Amino acid sequence: MVLKTSLWDSAELLDSPERIAAYVEAAFEDGDPSLITHALGVVARARGMSQLAKEAGLSRDAMYKAFQPDGNPTLQTLTSVMKALGLKLSAQSVSR
Image 1 (cartoon, rainbow, N blue to C red):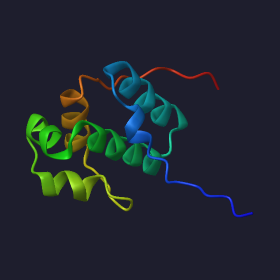
Image 2: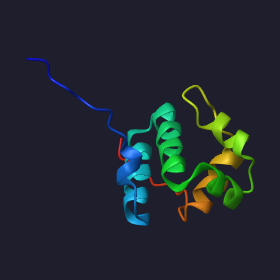
Image 3: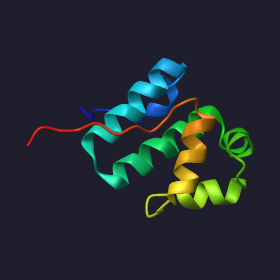
Image 4: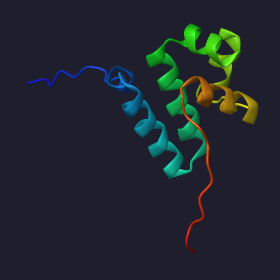
């Protein structure tokens, strides 16, 4: 018997500001820049890449380029997208 599977897209679950915030926060807690980039790309797809780009003051092409798997968004792009999502970056001290 062959097991049938289907693709799972986490963007389908990002249907509220609270879920988006939790998803992005988890990526930042991990600390891996590629995971953060991936998470913001997933959120952008969930919200609508074109609409989010417009809200962030970026072109749609710039958004796709910044959040593709090998993308490396600038700090300005990152903060613009976070602001458009209604999120903010903050720093916290960590115990060592």
